[in-house]
Amino acid sequence: GLFDCQPALLGGIKNEFLNSARLDNLATCFVALESILDYSKSADKDQDDMVSMIALFDHEEIGSQSTHGAGSPVMSEAVSRVTAAFSDNSHSRDPELH
Image (tube, rainbow, N blue to C red; front, side):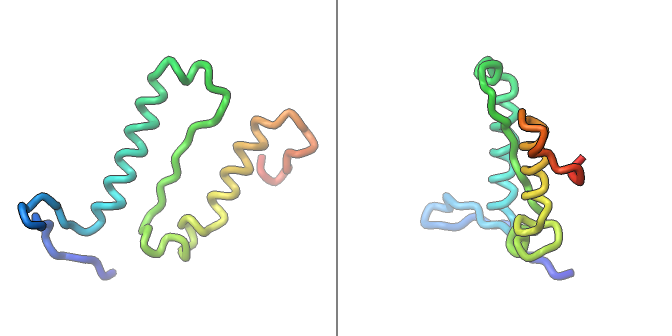
């Protein structure tokens, strides 16, 4: 496969920016994971009745078009399964999801 092989470098008037391939995706994935881990250790989560989760996808530039990217059925199926698992309405549960 093709990939960017240029090394990371500093840029900007005062070299205040780090320019690197995949940095935007790596940074946002790291911050999302760090945030949900911090929240899982907080006292606030004990009073929260919501489901906290993050979704991280491979090759985000074309991810929506891939078989396992953000546009694939995997995300909607995961949300449907989580919703069904916490639903009080037994009629809303799709037997194919279990």
